[in-house]
Picture 1 (cartoon, helix red, strand yellow):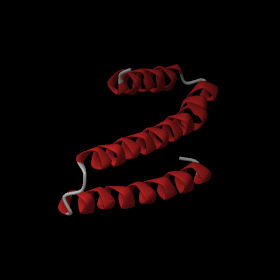
Picture 2: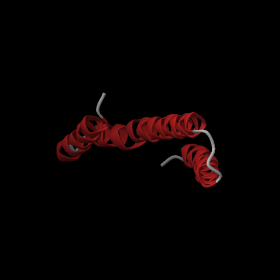
Picture 3: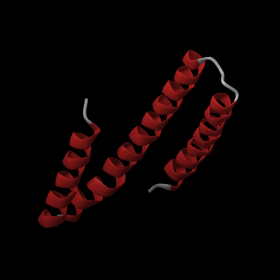
Picture 4: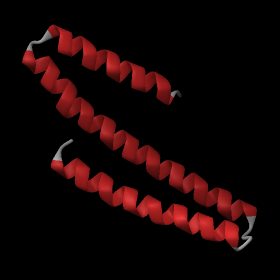
Length: 91
């Protein structure tokens, strides 16, 4: 992972961790259900952004390296790996 991507993802994940702890407090305090669901949706959206950033880095670094290496087996592995993970992510 590129240094900039790693720093950005770490920062985002730390923020998400705080959000999740906040949701736990909300549940413990019997806060309004819709407010809790709203915060859960915000965490999911934030995780999606991290996921996109990691995938973008993977394509720009790992997949690109496999392509430029000329190693066809490595190219196939990286493309198959990428397709598999995209399939798991769903719509």
